[in-house]
Amino acid sequence: MSLFSHHQHSSHQFFIFLLILAFKGFTISVSATTFTFVNKCDHTVWPGILGKPDLGTTGFELKKGTTQTFQAPTGWSGRFWARTGCKFDDSGHGTCSTGDCGSGEINCNGNGATPPATLAEFTLGTGSPDYYDVSLVDGYNLPMIVETNGGSGSCEATGCGEDINRRCPSELRVDGGDACNSACGAFGREEYCCSGAFASPSSCSPSVYSEMFKVACPKSYSYAFDDATSTFTCTDAADYTITFCPSSSPSLKSLMQSGPGSSVEQAAVATKSWIANLATGDSTRINQPFSISMSIFFMAITFIFSYLVF
Image (cartoon, rainbow, N blue to C red; front, side, top):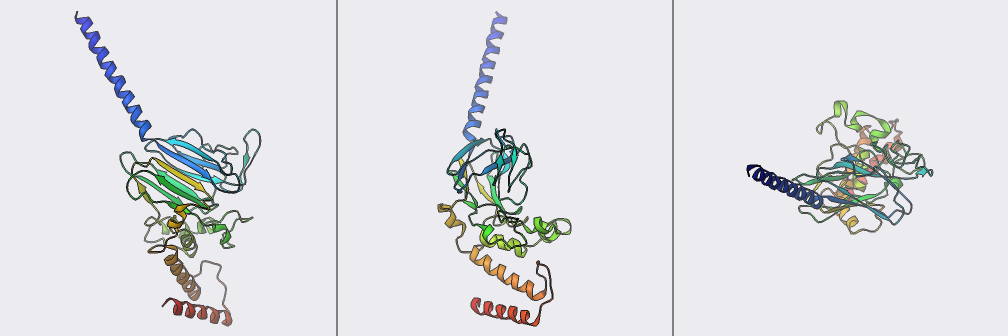
């Protein structure tokens, strides 16, 4: 009798255990986040994925006008980017002209993007908000925006909808004009990379080049310590949409609104800084002696700008 009672008790505990497992599985499936990739470019792109845990793929083809979705569990952390100009053979082996991950395959297999590349970065919270941003710290190769669906908190759209390749300075431009390097990538100097003696927010300041990125894309990271205006949060977001080449999206307007930190204000700051650097000889471009005529020219520009602004 006692053996039978013990068997019933054990069966009851096992049944409760199965219910708990089922409930946990249900909770995980409900709290999973959906990433939706949309290609509005006039060409195919090959998104790359670097993150943990694995989402089932680390790279895929996304033809013009198509979408693709992936599920990510809470706690997932990683980045997405688009590779362009890729040439893969029938076996899936090949390379890309921008954003290549060096795997020699469509899957990136744990490799990140070779700069320059526009990056979308995420850390999904576990009982805490998600953190996300679009970064130009490693340079830029195409427009990208991130939008949320559902969730609470600010949950703002962010990204870079501008074609920076068209305005990229020659010293940052990649051969062929398909991408634009960061100053760190182009010159490798510590003050641009926020490394060495410049590895803190107090010692690493925006450069003329990072300000150019900030003017074009006020909500994107322009250099390593550009946190205040570039990191966004959302709690319990059901879906994130990553759009490549968002030529017509309601979120594009909000990304370029005037106000504190907007492109209008940043443009003024960048222009003042650029003129000041030229006047003091601290320009990050290659320094060359100015002729008298060039000095008069820049003095005139400074006077006109001051008159218009003030």
